[in-house]
Amino acid sequence: MKYATLQKTNLNDWLEYLKKKAKLYAPRKKEGHFVFRPVKEVEDVCLEYIPTILPPKKYYFPQKERLFKFSAQPFKTAKAIDTFDEFILFGVHTCDIAGIQCMDVVFRDGPEDPNYLNRKDKMAIIGIECLKYCDKHANCVSMGNHIPRGGYDLMMIDIGDKFIIHINSEKGEKLVKGVDFIKESTEKEMIDLERVREEKKKIFKEEFYAPLSRIYDSFDKSFNSEVWKDVGKRCVGCGNCTAVCPTCYCFDVADEMELNLNDGVRYRIWNSCQMDDFARVAGGEDFRKGRDSRQRHRYYRKFKYPVDKFNRYFCTGCGRCTRTCMAGISLIDTVNALAPVAIE
Image (cartoon, rainbow, N blue to C red):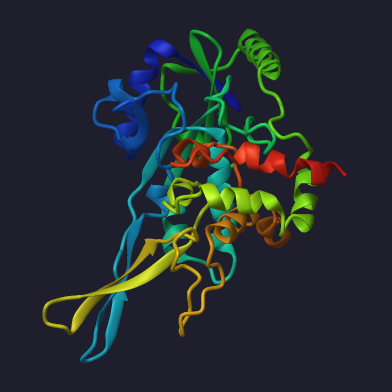
């Protein structure tokens, strides 16, 4: 079956079933915000949520990750992680699934990253399609991520008192097959699905003034734009924008020694191009001294450089960078400030 149906009254039963299959992570409310957390009580799972503070990226690209153990005398190394556990990400928005697809491209590009790929192999993704805007900060329509575009195993769509589940992989099929309260969708339910998606088209509108292809072209002409000076004056250099982004993948590497000064562990830790020492090299030379140049670099890393290298935009439209910016810098407003160049 390609489409299955789950009554909402059976949602918690399915969550209990999934908990037995693998480690389950899902969104829940916390102090007025939303976070992905391990599911202990299925009643805590919340499927109507503004994008979580951190994307689910933290489970397949951890903030601090052991790479390997080592000894100095005699010199030897060993894997820090021998086995990776099965886990399920539940209730993932389409913008965050797009973020996972971006990370796939990066970490599969040679040389491949074994830790990421091993985690990805153990991961199942169950998404939920957004039928309305999260809030005013999302720009998912302009990025084409308000609708499912693959990258998931199962996708849930709310059609009222039921969820239609699109089965998109063999891994996903195993999570619904044999569950007696999940049935193959009927013709009437598929008509309801089409009705819901038609209604959705009336809600979502383009957030950028110019088409995305024109926005891309504008970055060729905007390197010295006054827009970056304005953004740089307002930026406080906190790094929140990159910390919460689902597609930022920069990291630093650090060694931690045991007290015997012979044994240690090498870690990789999230890093940010917004930190003032990020582009500083030996001798003290800094290739991006000002906050204006660092912010410009961040935007080019979403709308220009990855398109040239991977043929993919690395902004997913989730709105997290705007939502968490201490200076109130809006990605939509910044890109639209470049729109006159894009329209020329």
